[in-house]
Length: 227
Image (cartoon, rainbow, N blue to C red):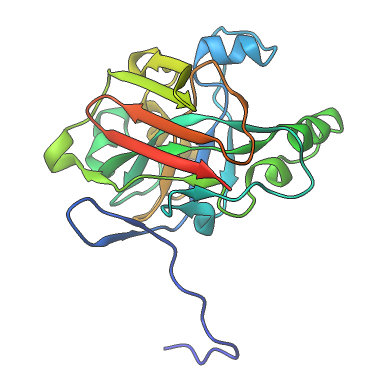
C-alpha cells in the first residue's frame, strides 16, 4: 500500500441501475461519429479514420444538474451512448470487442463550443472545451446482462420540451466493436474505461434554467437541469 503524502482523492464512479457503482479509469470520446453531425460542424460526412479526445474521469456526473461553466457564452448539448468496459487489452480483435463491455448508459458531452472553436483554429488540444467540471452528465449504467448490446434504437434530446437532437444508433459511422478494437491498437484498454460514442445532429446552445431530457431507446433516460 502506497504511503501517500496527501489524502488520496476519491475514485470517480458512475451509479449502476439497481445498486452499486462502476469505477471509472479513463474516458475516451469519439468525434464526428454521425454523418449529419459531421456536416453541421462543417466536415466531410464520408467515413474517415476515427479520432478520439478525452474527458477526465471525474467529469462524469450523475447529480442531474449541470453548472454552467465559466469563460463561455456558447455551451452546447451532445447526447451520446456511453459504453463501460469490464476488461480490456491491446489489439483486441473486432469479433471479441463486445466481450469486454459491462454495460451502457445515456450521457451528455457538454461542450464549451467557443473555446473548442478557438482551440481548433490554433491547432491546439480540445480539453478546455470538453474536459471541464461536470461536463459529462450520465444516467445509471445498465448491465449487458439486462440490455444485450444495443446496435440500433432511437437517440434523442429535448431542450425545455422541444426536440433538438434525434437519430438512431445504427447511424453511427464507427460501431461500438470498431471503436473498442481501434482504441486498443493505440492504448491498453482496461476495466473501468468509458467510451462516449458520438452525437447525432442538432447540437445547440443551453442556458441557465434550461432542462435537457435525453433518451436512448432500450438504454435509458437522463434529465439534467442547467444551473
